Image (cartoon, rainbow, N blue to C red; front, side):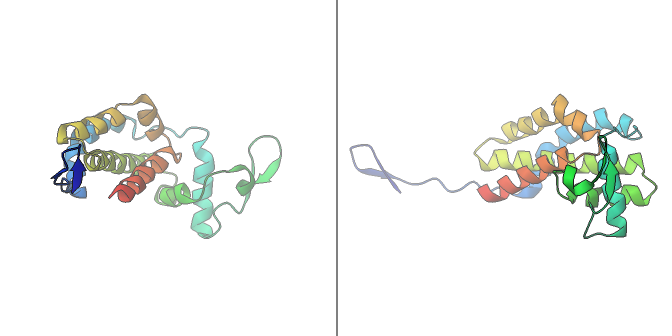
Length: 177
């Protein structure tokens, strides 16, 4: 209870909003469908030049899972250890291992990205609800994220931006919960 104003009347503290993570899927479903509509035609799209570093890292992770950056690569002008030029951790390498195990399959790599985006969309909706938004506002938050050109563009790559966004919003939602 909190004391309200000068009258000293106590008003009950509102009960915390009960949000189930499964609600996020249903609230984000329109956003997921929009993303699928835009991204599925590009499932077999060729990799970008930057994707190759993460694919090479995944290839190394298949050989040595504990050391996915333990090899040399010529990226600019001299051979260097990948760990010296790669600021990100090994998560994307691990996520791309199924694609590399299937011969560098673009559909598998892009499918992983779409699944990661769906996770981020669902967790965005759940976070919006936890922060007091209505169901409509939570669905709108997921739709705004799904329709962002940056989100769609990065989902079409094999780089870790969407994974970082999705795991980041998941962590924030868990912290708020």
